[in-house]
Image 1: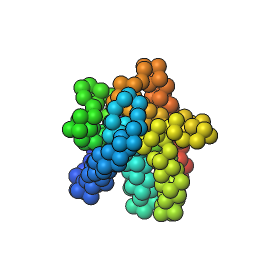
Image 2: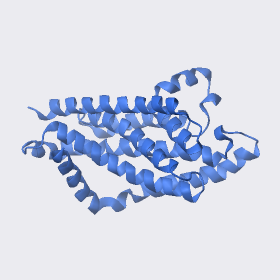
Image 3: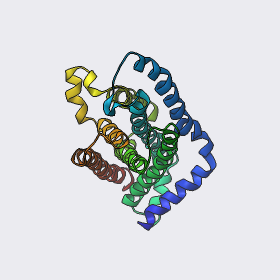
Image 4: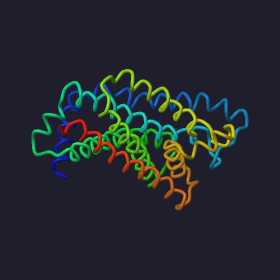
Length: 257
C-alpha cells in the first residue's frame, strides 16, 4: 500500500504545477451547464407542467444526474490520455518498474489518485448544489461518495484499456463518441428513463451510468430505499473490481517483459 501512495504522491506533485488547466473543465463547465440547463431550460420545462421524481423542480432532478455524469467524464479523461502517455510516450511506468514498486501498486496508485481528483470535482459540484438549495444535510456527503464510486467504476475499465493501445487519438475518440456520449444522453441525466422508448428502458439498467445517476439522485432527492441503493452500489463496485483486475492484467502484459 505504501508503494501505491508513492504513485499518488508523484501524481500530486505533477498536478500541483498544472492544476490551472483543469479548472474550467472540472469545475466551471459543469457549474455553468447546471445553471443554463437547470434554470434556463428548466423554466420552460416546468412551464409546460412536467413533473419529476420527488416532486421537485427540474433543477433538483438535473443536478444529481450532472454530478454523476461529471465524475464519469472526468474519470474517463483522466484515465485515458494521461495513462497512455505514461505507458507509451514518456515510459514512466517502465522507469517505475525498475524500482521496488510492483505493477499492482502502480494500478492501485493511479486509481487512488483519480479517486482523489473525483473527490475534488464532486465536492466542488456539491457545494454549488448546496448554494442552489438542491441538497442539504448529510445526504450531500453520501451523494459525493456515490458520484466518486461512479467515476471510479469507469476509471478502472478505461485504465485497463489505455494500457493496450498506441494511438490514443483514434481509440479514445471512439470511446468518447460511441460510449461516453450515448451514456451521458440516455442514462437518465436529463429526463426520466420512463420517457424513453421501451427498448431503451430495458437496456438502461445494464449500463453503469444509469446506476450512478439513480444512486446519486435517489440520495439527493430522498427517493431511494436501502435495498435499491445497495443494488446500484454493488453494480458499480463489481465494475470497479473487475476493471482493476483487468488493469493489473493489461499492465502486466505491457510491462513485464
